[in-house]
Length: 141
Image 1 (spheres, rainbow, N blue to C red):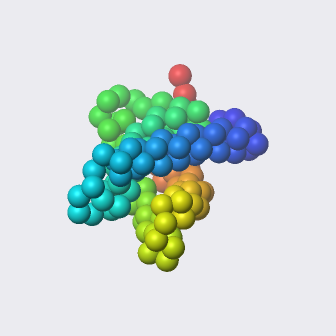
Image 2 (cartoon, helix red, strand yellow; image 1 turned 90 degrees about the horizontal axis):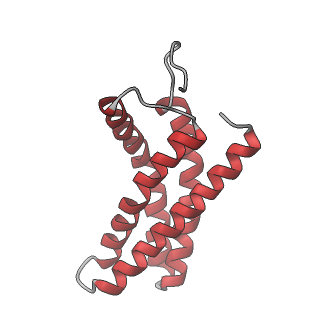
């Protein structure tokens, strides 16, 4: 694992990249789809775009973690995704609250950025404690 400052910088870079992809996917979706529940659906699409990317980047560059095999990696991704449920709730709640309060796309996206930031911080803490935990004999190859 890198130093604390290095981790913070990489994590921030990955968070910014994931946020940009999330918001970009939402914007594309809102532009392409004008049906019912467009806001809710766009939030879901944005999340679906960002989650796998964050998993791969964090697993390798933040936690220096190597899965034993595909089954182990799949279980880790499921656990990582479950940890995202709470933090995604923070993100969605803040984005939707900004949408309800201000009724403007720019403010909704600001709420998304703020919610993602708070969620990413909590997510790092949860992943460090519960997801990317090595057994005593595990070493990154």
